[in-house]
Length: 256
Length: 327
Image 1 (cartoon, rainbow over the protein chains, first blue to last red):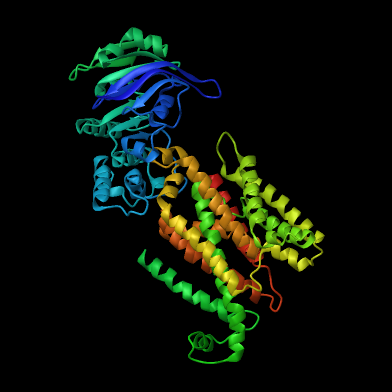
Image 2 (cartoon, helix red, strand yellow):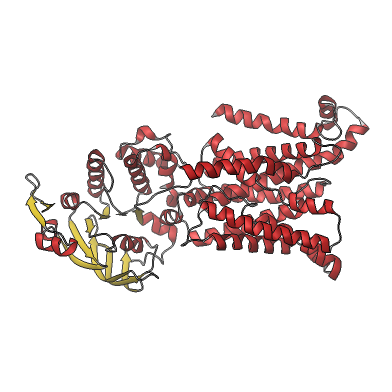
């Protein structure tokens, strides 16, 4: 089943930037990576998929619905976005933030049920932050903050999870942990579309990767089809050396 | 945490009693309690109570309403430096009210006098103007809002002053409208304020999770399932409406809506449902204290209550801005 279906998508901001003729689809249970240089339109694409922006032209379907049309609460039960920047204006506790992930599932006056509490607990445990429940967000390190935001998305319990920059600005232990979390989510049947800055992380975890450049799709394929010297040079404008991972056999790219 | 709650609940009746016994005429607390609960009869105390009780309750309810509005606007605009006063809502509402009086007296449109239509219109106009001036690339930077709030408040305060001079009222009336006062509050005022403040309270409690989500940012709230645009408009209008109704009776009282949410968050954390309940107590108690001070300091003369809140609130705002700049 196609979870995401995009055909001939065009989009432009008032100030000129645009996505041009973007087409791709994501199958249920897939871990789909998006890579490309800064300003390629990766974040914009995710925001369209979650319903924040409307495309100027083309077909965008998420679970067969136009994301900006469908009832907001219903949509929030299906799709979430882990955005790159997360700056709450108030100093919430870690638990309060993760609890907000349950927002679409709670009725107006309903108090959180035992199940909600369990899900919040599990989400915190999944990212290794269950000991930080009562800490407030502003006192956390960048890596810890990222994990909390991720736990919130897990608590939202959606079938599709969009992630803007899975591992940016994280130390190695956190990168490893979040990769494990993502693989585990995939194992439980979630579909994940994630933007990656680190090509090698993308190569190790993704089923398929889409490369974008200047708002257009440059190529889609399995990691070994995409992480190829000629493709990477054409997209990033720098020479790369591609080797194989000794264990997984997946490609690894190094700047020459 | 528990201790804080117990303290909050204990402070409430104590400060109400304090507000009742203190003032230009001081009453004996025990005697007053006796009269209040119908155990004793004392005509003198009863007469003072008839004047002072509605006043204490009115100040409590207005304090509660302004604090709830301030708390709501701080979450809604993702800006911890706003309150109904700094957004210009209060000044706009005050001008609208005085304009209603002017029109009612000079053009015999007396229904305007009874309806808070103009104060609501001008409160929305003023707050809209503040946000319009402070807007930068779709955002409302904290200090920009404060600055444009000053611009808009000054404008409407000036207009209010002019209008009162045109009304040929004396200077005392002017200070009431520019700085607020509970002098001469009646039971009718209390019922009215109770209605407004409790409506706002119910709204805050129903939509507390929405307002938590808004504090994460508009895009985050959207992703979580909030219909952001609709919610913003409805909350903004309701907040304006509540404040304009309160201001139409008590005049412009600044800074309560700014200070109280901060104190509440300090006491009970940032979750909106908690800050809402804490704001009710802290806001009510704070403004009833301020009112008690305003009528005790220079008795028998009264200081407008807004002067007292400004004396407390202005340094507080300065502190917040300084801290905000540093972080």
